[in-house]
Length: 181
Ligand SMILES: Cc1cc2nc3c(=O)[nH]c(=O)nc-3n(C[C@H](O)[C@H](O)[C@H](O)COP(=O)(O)O)c2cc1C
Image (cartoon, rainbow, N blue to C red; front, side, top):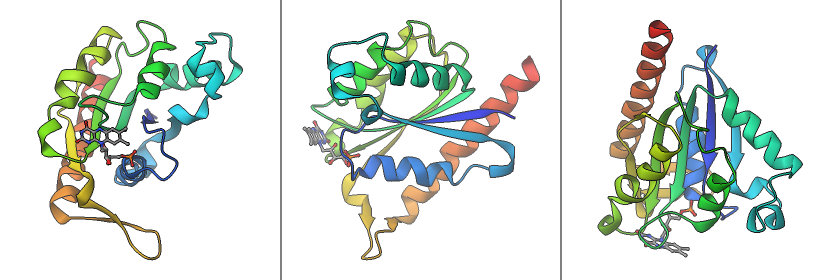
């Protein structure tokens, strides 16, 4: 059964992009996939900032990445790119950690002006880490992501449609990979 890793890049504990990540994972045909979750916040800050390659929590994250067939990434845009803590986490993974993984990147940002952050900031890093199947990214304005009084995520229909299409493309790419092997 293919394994999907949900990778969150936000340092914020009440993160919009992370809520979308979990929502998008819920759109997967559940019986066909296993999922696990990693956040940049899972590492002790000192291990992250001081690049402690022997960190036990890092070993656990490295194993989760290694086991994944597909990776669903969701991150906020920070300074027309993505958060430094997320880059710090990527820096602690092996240079070829993303080889043969199918990647679906999702980003939330305050402005449409930084729509290309996925293509210009994130994709080059994913590529250099070995990823060759990086699916079309999904950019969502933070204003399109609301939480109801019950705390539940509320998404515009247009966002929901794009997430469903993205998940469908992830499922199809994983099936193609399985057939090719
Ligand atoms: C430090 C910081 C820098 C940001 N820089 C940008 C930016 O350059 N472009 C943009 O569109 N949004 C920017 N934003 C807004 C966030 O991308 C947006 O609020 C996002 O939805 C937050 O996601 P999160 O709740 O998952 O952390 C920034 C937010 C913060 C806190």
